[in-house]
Amino acid sequence: MKQFDIFKCNKCGSLFETVLMGKECCGPIEGLEVVEAKTTDASTEKHVPYVEEVEDGYVVKVGKDVAHPMLPEHYIEMIEIFVDDFQYRKYLKPGEAPEAYFKVPKGEVKCAREYCNIHGLWKDK
Image (tube, rainbow, N blue to C red; front, side, top):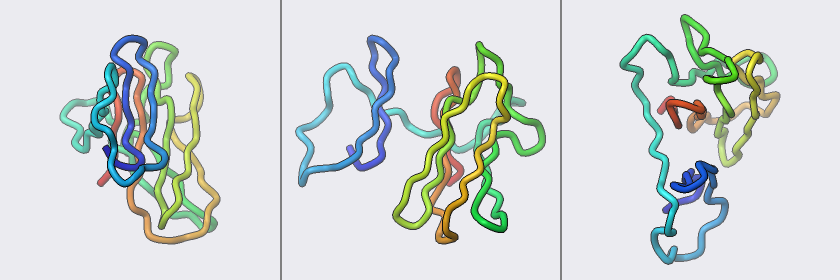
């Protein structure tokens, strides 16, 4: 377990994130499993987020050539970007564009992640 790991409850499907870590974690938490981020799209549906640098920050989009669906039954729930030592997140709803604008100071982009309600967690690096 490490900082920013995302876990899913096997019973209700809720997601949890590790925020702060002690020196050593007591081990796996019963009923929670780590959600591993996928990095390669193998199908026609696009999930790997990509980052565009803009004048005053970054835009993270899901679906470079074709936008990811944003239907009530299939949509991107959240998009986040890690810049330097900071994490920024935007929550999305069906009907919105599958992208997030982050007006933040420029820095080293560590990675971008997104969570699809059907296909899970994806990251770009």
